[in-house]
Amino acid sequence: MKKKIVINPIFKINGEVNLPGSKSISNRVILLSALSKGKTILKNFLFSEDTEYMISALKKIGISIKYNRNKNEVFVLGSKNFFKIKKKISIFLGNAGTAIRPLTAVFSLYKNDVKLYGNDRMNIRPIKDLINALKDGGAKIKYKNVYGYPPIHIKGGFSGGKIYLYGNISSQFLTSLLIASPLAKRNTEILIKNKLVSKPYVKITISLMKTFGIKVYNKNYCYFKILGNQEYVSPKKFFIEGDASSASYFLAAAAIKGGEVIVHGIGKNSIQGDIKFVEVLKKMGATVNIYKNYISVKKRHLKSVDMDMNNIPDAAMTVAILALFAKGTTIIRNIYNWRLKETDRIFAMSTELKKIGSKIKTGEDYIKISPPSKFVSSKINTYDDHRMAMCFSLIALSEKKIIILNPNCVKKTFPNYFSNFFTISNFKK
Picture 1 (cartoon, rainbow, N blue to C red):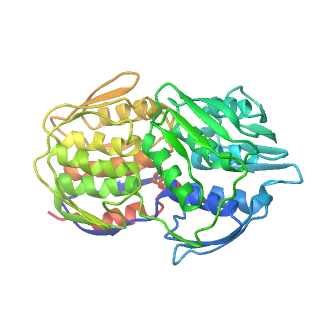
Picture 2: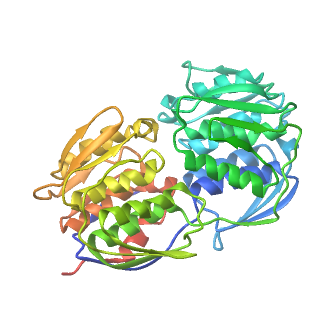
Picture 3: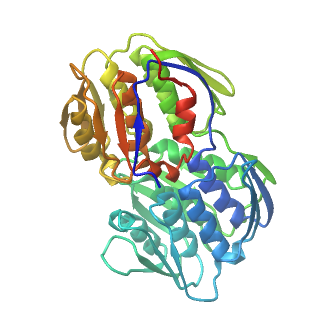
């Protein structure tokens, strides 16, 4: 494993990139496929650390999963009956929130004896609001170590009913409840307390559930109703669109230093919230064209923005890097949930942006970024956070060398990120 990667100054960006499949969609659809009776073929599946944890968990309970990594295809032979486990098991899920949270809900449906746990970071990421909501529906779940955090011990018992859920921590809690609810014995009503964060990710979930035969009644993202005693129905084949969050780094690179960059695999009909990143690019002054299956960006003079980015929390990190190359001070607001991700991203971004010469001010839920008067070549700590590594690779566009420590953390969502980035980079002046 590489302890660091040195990125020499990049003087021009130009080229085309084929995006890997979306992580958010990949982990959702493989779980939905596992819950559906029969065979499902998933095309353009993302093979990354997070999806491998989901695959490993599903195989451990008996789901038949075969794959062709060269073609990014996965073949799933599923049935909800596999989630009725007859023996005591423990499943390790690393730091994969898109795995541990929905699996918690699904395993809660049946009489089980399941322990779910993760790495050190996962074991300090809160899960209390999801557990409380599942308990409202009859689930029996205990914390193994610290109250409110993994590891957890699931005994089953979730049967639906009226459930209250705090929506201000993670949209993955609601996604998990939505996925489990159609299989519950009773109808489920979910009432959201506080404002729901990251709504576009819930939109993804509802859209995918519809593809698998389940309708969710949704009233303004404050109230949801799902009928119980339903069955997921496999669509037989499903193509996973390219990852919009991953697209942001290449599109941002073009806006900073293009040339022109074209990213294939995502377009105007995307179901992902981070497609809205292109609207931010336009507001900052880049030339953006979005088509059915690809997006192109060209450089123009960039200007600062002051925006609420709660709906695009991952792509908002890329905006923080764009801010370094824009005229004026950029403010990214309503991003408290940055603090609950793979690391405390407000702290991490602030610390590392200061190293390269930027003036930073932060609050509980915002970051204010003023461009450096002069960029400084630095070693960047990634905090074992894949998005830190990918974001800070763009600092080389300042024509300063940048060193990324622990670059292998990108395997969480985009194992081939650096090789893709280098194919569109010109290191010669």
